[in-house]
Length: 73
Image (tube, rainbow, N blue to C red; front, side):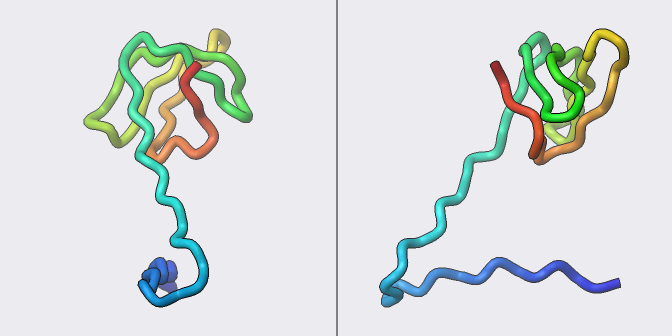
């Protein structure tokens, strides 16, 4: 297996803007969310910020952090 590439650090003398780092997403039980693949759902359980159990109506799925395809409404 190969290791993923480490992010390159921004040099203060660079003429380019520093990349914007997004804050990690935080969800709470009861939050209404939308997922790019599964649609509209409601968070029913959180496991120490590592995953969220979401009820999408027809199914309940555990979505792992960093929740790339899920946003809070």
